[in-house]
Structures are given as structure tokens and as C-alpha cells.
Length: 131
Image 1 (cartoon, rainbow, N blue to C red):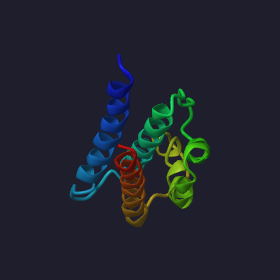
Image 2 (image 1 turned 30 degrees about the vertical axis):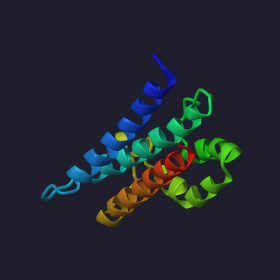
Image 3 (image 1 turned 45 degrees about the vertical axis):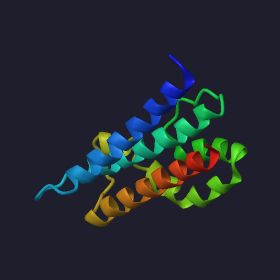
Image 4 (image 1 turned 60 degrees about the vertical axis):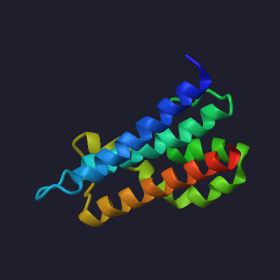
């Protein structure tokens, strides 16, 4: 499979996960807040890994957005604007999927969507600049 097709798959999966999170957030009580936050983290992860892949690097198998962001910064220092987004979303990578003491509120869910959108918009803007 060609590089461009693989890159498009990274971006398409990121978009799909964010759209799924947004759709689930419109559900009437109870909204699956933990699942929504998890999908937002996964979306951001796909966008960052897509950018890394576009630089001919195989993305690390990690869910830590802060680590992925550090790799992105090697290729484009502008990625530092996403530091707080990555920090907030990383906590949703694993914890919501298993029984735990993490309490996720409606505000957390809304913030997760906003942070994932910020990552999506930034990465797409970078790709548009490069083309």
C-alpha cells in the first residue's frame, strides 16, 4: 500500500473517531462520557501518528500523546501549541476503558471534544500548508 493511502487511513480514522465522539455526545441521558473521552484521545492519537508517518517514521506503539507530540516537534516546532491538549487527552487513553476511580464529568467530555478538535484542525492546517 502506498504512503499517501496509508496517511489518508490515519487521518480518516482520526476523523471517524472524533465524529463518533461528537455523535455520542448528542445522546440523551446518560451520555457515555468515558467512551466519548476515550474516542477523543484516540482521534488525536491518529492525527499525530499520521503526521509522524508523513515524515517517513513508523509511529511508536504508544497511547501517550505527550510522547507523540515530542516526535512531531522534531519535524515542526509549531506543534508545541498542542501541549495542553495532549496533556489533557492522554489521561483518557486507558483509564476509561477499565474499572477505576476516574470521575469524568460532562465538562470533561466537552473539553475532550474541544481538545480533539484542536488537534485535528492543527494537523490538517499543517498538511494544507505543506501541499
